[in-house]
Length: 396
Image: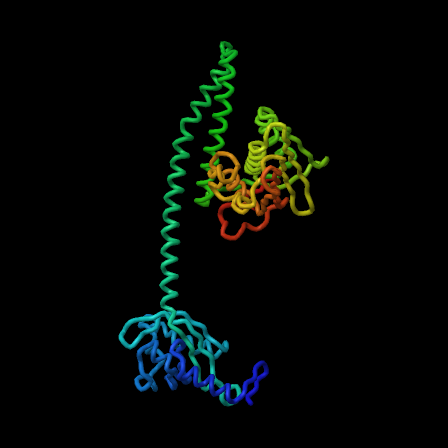
């Protein structure tokens, strides 16, 4: 009976295992080599995988299996040193077969200690994982292709947004001039009001497109200032009041009685709240209600936009902040639109080091969006370096 601190086996099992590993398996290669790197043992699996019979490798350096580039870097020696120092050395690399072809080997080398703690040799157990490497390479190619297509799509969106934005300014100026004319009255005034609302909607869509392309290009920036949060939220309410009134949706708010200050990008925070409010108004039928509430703790402030409108299905909830989700209106029952507003909201909140989540019990049961942002800037989120420089940009 052989025993160790964490394992035990009987002699019969040990012999069966030894026979299996050394002679009975072709799936696993087993190589024994000494401290100088010369091969001293070679099993059936090593022969099957590499094509070398034992009489051609015993006494040869293990480096013979390494491709020339790895031999030049002495990676065979590095593998041996790592196993002797750390206790094991895992590797994934190309190895050579007898016919000169290569295979992707995954394996591990461990030291052998016959006399006390002294390392007298090593065992390398490996397998041919070329098929897995091929699959991985195929997936890598798919990812690169997808990234290329995404970049082309982003460039197209940016171009479209830019081309749409150019004519908006003269259109807006023309409508304002028409509205200032004393001759505009009756049906003309009503038509002009419709034009103004639709132009404002178009402006919001174009700005969402522009911000989306900035996000994808990593060019969305924050300019931090110390602001009274109640002032920003009040401005958001004022900007959305007209849309709520026209639809017959009651817009309510509850703020702390004492002014709360935070270091944020006020324009971007305003954009977040306006997007959430407009989203709630859009999906709340006439006679419904939208609430904007705000609270704070020692480190963060919370903004909640709640409505008793159409709600969100369980299928849509996990995707609600993904770009273009809103485009599938028939499926989501969330109406029409590009579906970029909430995606931009998530990015702006993330740049602030915050989080945004959504809750809904299902269709026709309303929804609640909760934004949680630090009162003071913290570290830039991983992978977002350069997109926000909170400590440099903070203004008193």
